[in-house]
Image (cartoon, rainbow, N blue to C red; front, side, top):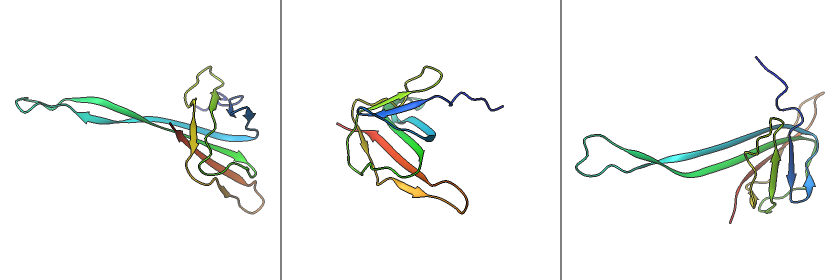
Length: 114
């Protein structure tokens, strides 16, 4: 059953809060690393490095550009901070979509950066 757990969540890029957030999605996957030895009877694995992605949908357009490197602070309504990055990198030009009689939505994809 759906609840209002997302409502009230926020994102700040460097010192600028992003307003009109429609949705956020954080993924922190990591690849598996095979650690099986030559004489092992079963395969064994360890988790690899995380491959984090934060995707944000906002109402309207955005002035953000591909390649910019903001610090990203995420404050989920439930108190979590998944997606917070000391230095993120906007990975592609923010895309925009819309439809007749509906709002325009911009999508921003951010991944960690050095």
